[in-house]
Length: 326
Image (cartoon, rainbow, N blue to C red):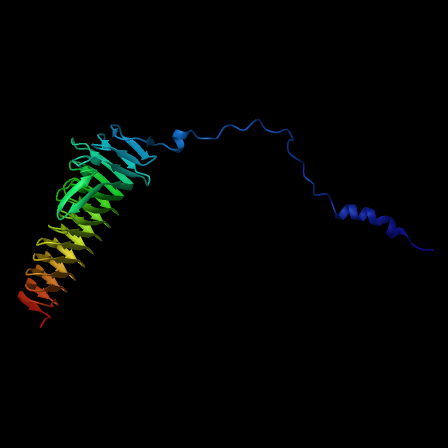
């Protein structure tokens, strides 16, 4: 007779060695309605829109353009309050005033505003150069802020103004102003004036292209006066289309300057600089010149009290003490 005891016991053994792993479930009652989580528009965009001109900012805060702005006369935007940030938001401010007088794309109050930031946009005007006479339609100045303090302009392009491009404070005072990554083209007088100017360009200026305490990585050309004039210049180029100074600084490093009858580059200390003159002027003029190269077509290539490892490629050299040179 067959033994069937194992067949009978098998189900009970399975129950012993494979216990249930199921866990108790939580409450099945759904929670209440979700609470609102959306932010208000003011919380998302805590700025004031500017959609028409002329417009005056009298209170501190953040403002932004929502469209291109055009005025027929005078100033487009006037900032009379302190602690203001204005974002042009990629739009253009322009003027059709005919003829262009003294209106500004952005005017910083004459009373002396402070803590001002202007960024990201264009100021366009219709002034042209008629053989040294700047005339036409539009603004007198792009950004005008002679009495501003702690002011900054970044990412602004200005073109075709009768007087100046971007003026923040006085270039040779401690107004603590900054112009960065800006461009100015075709203005009747000063291109850019600020305590510090970085990574910017001012060309085709009737007056001095760039005037500042410190200038870094900049390019400035003047039709009749100085290209770049400052206390300290690093990696800069300046040019004068007349008898002005191409680049003038107390200390200049890795810079270049050209002139037509004036001085290409002049500095108390010039380090690794190049200067050229296309007439009867001087290529490089320095008290101390190190590793510099001067050229003049009919004048003096290099003039220095002390010159070390320098070269004068053309013209007579006016050097008192030479080191590591022929």
